[in-house]
Amino acid sequence: MLLKLEPESEIPIYMQLRQQVINGIAQGALKPGDMLPSVRQMAVDLGINLHTVNKAYTLLQNEGFVKIYDRKGVMIVEQPGYDDKFTSELEQQLKHIYLEAKGRGMNREHFLKLTSSVIQSAEKGEF
Image (cartoon, rainbow, N blue to C red; front, side):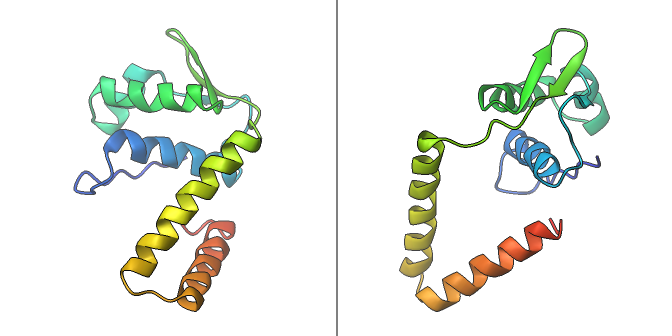
């Protein structure tokens, strides 16, 4: 899986790395049992600080996407699925995104059209 980080982005590098791993899992490029490089090797491969990689990997482990093995690497685990807690958190995030869009003048129809377009792009792997 090819990772593309954007150093000039407002999104911190560790969050970009986290999201790209999750995208890889969602799109089937990363499957349970697949190994990611160790923290040190990923940092070298991407040319970033190892603490940045460690932060991303730790988040992914806390969220149930990976298991970290000392000196061996990081293994993708069975997808954690979703529960009421995740659904509630997702609902809050979506409300915030919608209200921000509405606060900037976007109407409901445009928001729904944009959301549908994003879902279609994601399902085609266009990220």
